[in-house]
Length: 224
Image (cartoon, rainbow, N blue to C red; front, side):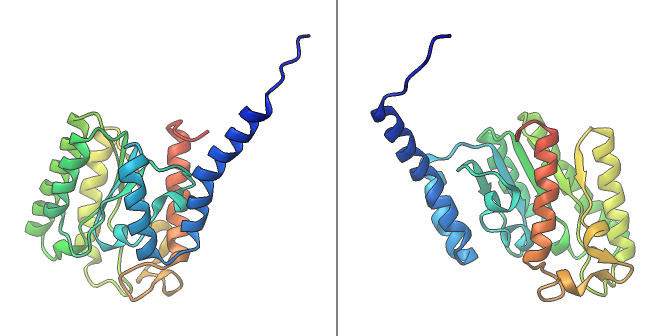
């Protein structure tokens, strides 16, 4: 059998490239989240590809550098989460993701819509469907995470109604859904062990969410 030899120059070049790509990502993992996001955002704008986008409100934004939470160690994961944004406002970023040709878009929305009536359920649902349609029309695959309860949730009835309507739409259109309420909540809402302030989640919860996303990406053959 013919033996193949690699020259020292090729080997050294490969090691250097590996270090250039890997060391910054490992360094980011150890940094403060807000600083992570700034540095990572600068890096991906220059070197990354548009594979995976995250859109949502402050809970999505709080994931900072999602790449290290979902096990995707490249510069192809973008976080467009914005604190305080409603579903209607998040639609702006859905259009941006659609224009820029991402492969996948992870969405969680509705918390800032203050859904406390059936009319608000319908209004938020229509905005959400608009997001999903904008993505699918541009061949971006949406993955939905249902709205998460707060601690001692007082609007569970309407959140359940909203989530059920979104789930029904997703089933009809073959959209993958992640239900964090089954993993992070009990009958009263978000468990204290996963809560940072009653509404936002802590790193332990992000770790669970990240593992669910990693599983989805494996199922879709993005990760091997």
